[in-house]
Length: 216
Image 1 (cartoon, helix red, strand yellow):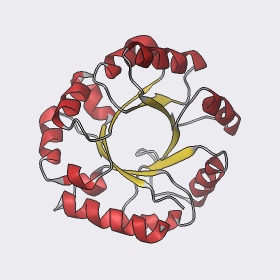
Image 2 (cartoon, rainbow, N blue to C red):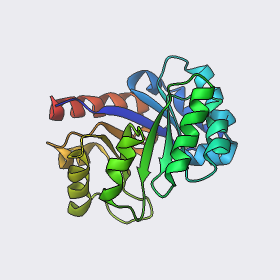
Image 3 (cartoon, rainbow, N blue to C red):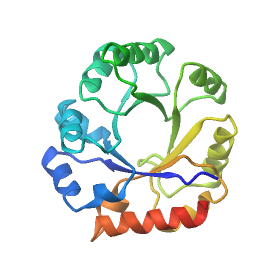
C-alpha cells in the first residue's frame, strides 16, 4: 500500500503568521504545503504567488474551495502557479472545466481536487473522475464536535473503492492515525496538530514516521 503524503495547511489569519509558521523548519519535513482557505480569504490570491516564490521546489496547494466563477477565481489563484487547487463538491461541471482551461492558458499542469463538504453523492464520483479530478478530500468539519466517527471512516473506505486518490483532513492528530489503518488514504492534511506543536518540524517528522509505520 502506498504511503500517504503529509500536507501542512497554513490556515492562518495573516501572511505574517504563515511565514512565521514556515520559519520553524517544518517545510523541509512535509510533502505538500497548503495556502489554507482562511489565509487566502484574509490576504487574497497574492499569498499563493508569495509562497510559490518562497518555496519554488515544494509542491504547493491553493485551497480556496472554488464553487463558482471558475475562470475568474481560478485564474487569480493560478497566477500564483500552484501545483494543486481545490474545488467545492457543490460546483457545476462547467466550473471544473473553466478552471482547467485557465490552467491550460498559463501552460500549467495544476491538478484539481474536490473538497467534500455537506451534501454530496457517491453518484458524482464517476463524473469527477471523467472530468480529470485528481483527488477527493474528505473533511471532518471543524464545526462538528468530536473526531472522526465510524460513519466517516466507512465513507472514506467507500470513496477509495472508486479508484481515485482520497485525502483525509480535519481533527486528525498522532493518536488518530490508527483509525485509518488498512485504508489507502493518499494524503493526510494537518493544520493545528503541526503548527500548534512546541516543535512543528519535530512533530511533522513524528507524524511521518507513524504514517510510514502503519502503511509500510
